[in-house]
Structure formats: structure tokens, C-alpha cells
Image 1: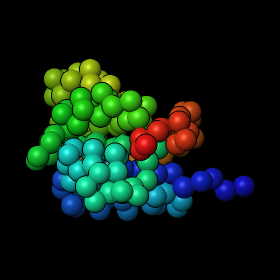
Image 2 (image 1 turned 90 degrees about the vertical axis):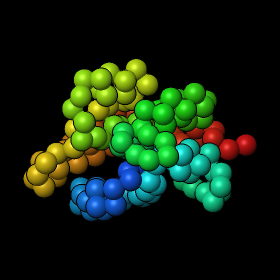
Image 3 (image 1 turned 45 degrees about the vertical axis):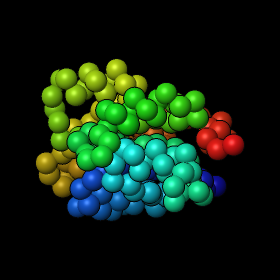
Image 4 (image 1 turned 120 degrees about the horizontal axis):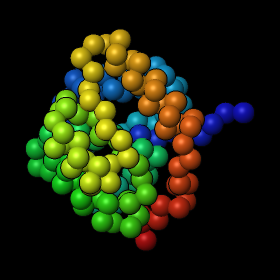
Length: 151
């Protein structure tokens, strides 16, 4: 029995980081639908089907960088978690910051988890395996039908 594709939205302004994340995610999970936007504003547009994203898929998981232009991760969390249809989508912060203030602000903003970006390929691979196993195998997520984002 095969599982339905797991949909991930990566919000990351660094193209090299986004490509590495996508490659590693595809290594640990062949049946993944990957979407990428470069800042929080684009993420909100993607999630609500606005401005160029009318048929965008609702993700099972949002992976969010904090330090981005236009709209940073903290501002995205505040805005996204204030929208009924987005509130239930888990958001995993993946940031280079190990600053306690960023960690506290992320959880205060209703992030579902916080991971510091690893510095080595091997550590990144280990973390990606853990992310996939946890978010896809351990936790129960709301069904996509429960997330009424578009009217």
C-alpha cells in the first residue's frame, strides 16, 4: 500500500539551501511534493491562492527560514497563525540562528518545532531523515480536507 504524496512548502530565500533541502528530502522520501517560495509574503500568497498561486497545493508541513527579505519568518508566523485555514498547518523553523530570542519568538508565534541548520552534509542528512520520520510517520496531522483555505 502506497502513501499519498507528502506536500512540503519550504520558505527559504537562499537558493543553495533550498536546493539542498529538496535533494535531501527526495533522498529520504520518494513520494514528496515539494514547493518553494523565497519569503513570508510569497508563502502567504501561495497558501491563500492569491497573486499567481491560484491552484497551489495545501502543504502538510511548512518549513520556514527566519531571516528573509520582504517578510521574515517571525512576521510570517504571526500572520499565518492569525488565519483560520492556516493555523493548523504545522510550521517547522529551520534557521541558522541558535539565539534563544529567535527560538522563544518562534514558539511564541506557534511554531511546531525549531531546528538549527546543520553545518555538515552528514548532519543535514540525519536531520532530514528525522524530519521525514517524525512529520510523516509519528505525528497525526490534520487532513488536507480540514484545511479550508479557499472559498
